[in-house]
Image (cartoon, rainbow, N blue to C red; front, top):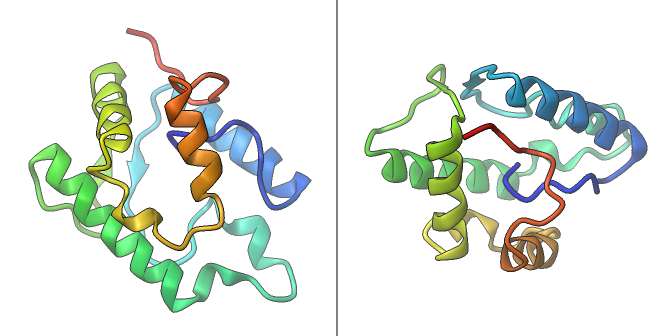
Length: 130
């Protein structure tokens, strides 16, 4: 989400992701879920969705842990998080510093996300007012 620049698995995927980002920009909370989430929804309609793979579930669990550490709390399924400007900036810096990158290991988007964060998040869709 931090490095989303409008690229994805398919047009349906990016259209869906764009709608989700628009809601977050308007201040909607993120609910921590388990398993394939709303972002993954368009992939579930394909022949072989990877959303159910063990590697994806492990990355999700690691990301939940890392983000919880960053926020100073233990996040659990069902918790809600709002992404305001200070939180977003904190998340971005932690990503650049590698604090929240453990879950990125093995992800096919690793290089793109690295390039986006190294370029000061230029072109990202998730922007919130200060």
